[in-house]
Length: 212
Image 1 (cartoon, rainbow, N blue to C red):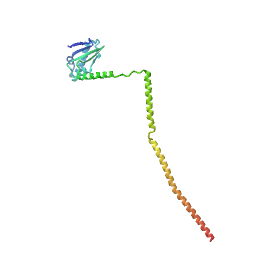
Image 2: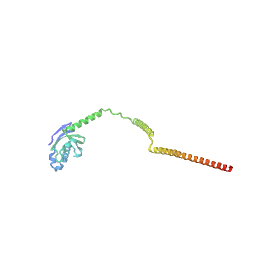
Image 3: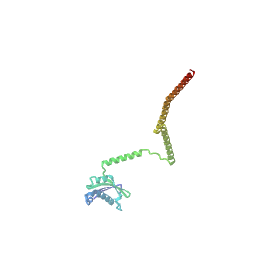
Image 4: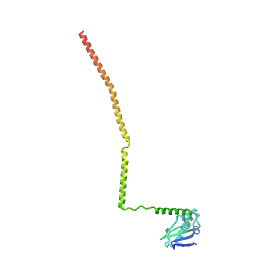
């Protein structure tokens, strides 16, 4: 039924699991689900999980993709897996990973190595952290003050502009009123002078008539 090769005592094993007999027991639209369940039942039985709890079997990403590759109606007839026992949990993955999976694993390893090589920042004690926070707050306050100063010297707002315009208009109107009053005053003065001259002439005539 299944070939078994032991690696690292009993922690890691490779199995070839037959699936056809199991998924033929159910209708076509349930075959892939039944294949996944058959893998779990096989591992529970052969990896010595005594309580038969299927939740302790974790199916890997690439194994799951392999089972569902051709859809729910056409799962594979058999599958070769690598099972690793970590305490009571068993992780199952394809024994022969595809090229895409190998590339992704290589990238992950490269990232992990790069992260290890980077120098980690020294951990600061609590008082040092507080001092750093205070300094950062002071720097931020200074920046805010610098930003507020140019705002004060910025261009006047629309309300201020309107008030200035009203003042200018009022001054202009006052000046125009004064200019309009001056010619009328001149005319009045001239009229008074003419009237006074006529009165003087009349008085002179009366004096001459009396004298004649």
